[in-house]
Image (tube, rainbow over all chains, first blue to last red; front, top):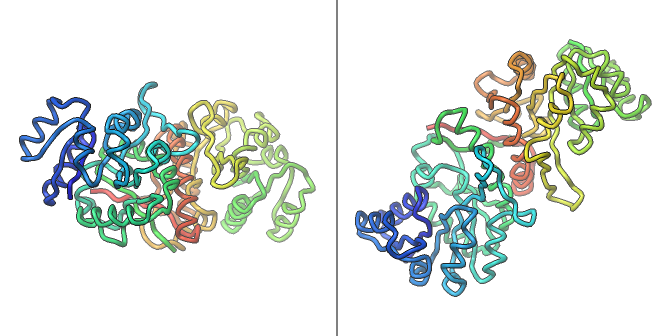
Length: 215
Length: 215
């Protein structure tokens, strides 16, 4: 599949590298066409890089791995016309570090960033997933033993199915992909970040994940 | 131990009943001395009931099981002098249902309700715990198989130890009592509620809990 990964941070590069390894045609998107990190990554992985708009224009599926507070701007730069009809996988977290650590989670209009993205780009098919764990676990779930989970939610069932298949190709067993229903489920997963960050501090590592145990 | 449980809802009655079963001297506290539910519970359990103030005055340890949005008022009614020096176990959640379901989580001054309680009653020794699961699991963790966890946080180490011992007496193994450090850890556990409520909806039951799996 032709996939644009928007965002050149750890999360974006990790996801883009995994997608390349799985045989997808990946373009890493950044603010400018000559972004040093994106250029280096593309050379190393024999993949493409470009502006947010160029990356999204050529893609069938778009991953938003930009920082949550700049995601709307990045997607505006990508262009609504380049997102229309496409699955947009939102893995970002609206963390506000302006008052230091720990960051506050922004809740746009009392909801989630994912819903705000969906409202702003109504023709995109937004699916929220993977934002509740560190990037190494995202693409290699087996590095954490046991039945930990990944959450998925979105308003478009077909888009959610596409993302579920992508997660399965990452190594996520079907039983551990938890469908939270429509996109408002992102309110729960985005607000999980304060606990995740706290645990990272007390455990001394981000190499963990949540499980759900049932009676 | 002489324990006051403030709040006569499901959570308060469940905790009070467990504490009675464990041999503690329990007083169920409510707004008025003649609260019908509290009177009935006390008769059934051969225990005591009374106003928030009467319950707290006679107690060595106070459990706040009132609704999060009325907790400060309930604790004011209990009286700062009746909380001073005592362990106050806060199991409440600041859920605002004024706009319907799902509720919003209030974050007083950008923090947690537990911290707000601690600031308001500086001589109380506030420990946050048990607010991330349904009341039946709180007092009988074994009803959910597997290594699910309970979080504990607070500024007073000795108070946290008292609460940890209480949790152990409920059936929580030491390895599954996760110490999140000081009371600001409550920001994480209080904001877990939107995900908990969502999962209750999608799983069709509140009879579950979270686990933490490490690499």
